[in-house]
Image (cartoon, rainbow, N blue to C red; front, side, top):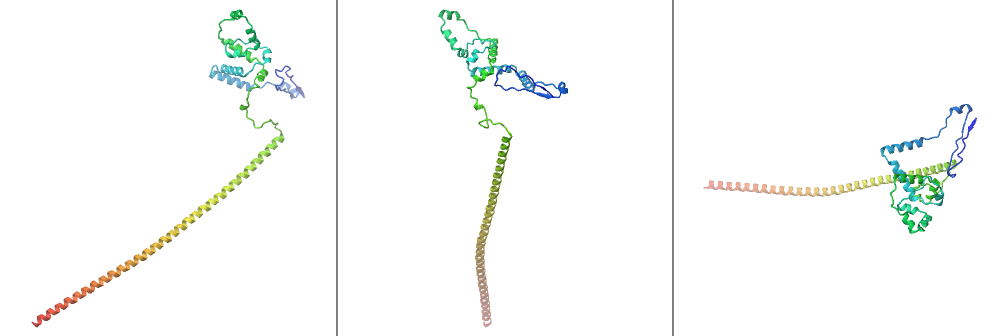
Length: 285
């Protein structure tokens, strides 16, 4: 067994940054068949994405570059370390307010101590910065060490952009995973019990509503029955009264018919008696 241990980078830009050492162990006869390369897949994807953005919208990379510089120039404070650290290209003078705010107190004092003659000699028309000067300032700003940028951005509150589940970070161990699994199982069990209780309550409520509905239907049926009985009683009384009135009318009509018959019989008898009397008188003459 052989071991290839690459030497670590002796000069780190920031010793606090993490770094990794790859140790590859293989058989002696298989060493020539192995090829170890740096994984640049993600970097290639980002590079291809940037190229696609640049092709779709020319100048997008420059805009993003300028936005980053503007962000750094807004939030990065000038520190003594940054003043003492040499940058590859010095910053050019800018006539804007931002450059005036970045002038060190020593420079302001030296300017204040100049004589009027010197100030008159230094007075010259200000010329707008050219794109080459902007590029120079950009390169000089980007050449600042990331440690200084991080130190300058320490006062920036980014807590509103961070979402955390816990206040303190925890190491994901097997015990913690088991504890979380048990807690999750307990939560699931409690939820199932709660669900079963809710379902039983809903079933009981549904049964109560069905009973109440049946009771209401029974009450309405009893009301209809009592209404039918009362209506039938009224109908019976009405029918009895009607029959009674019809019987009285029939008796009255029969009595009238009997009287008419008696009158007709009496009239007939009277007529026959008159005829007999007339016949007797005629015979006597």
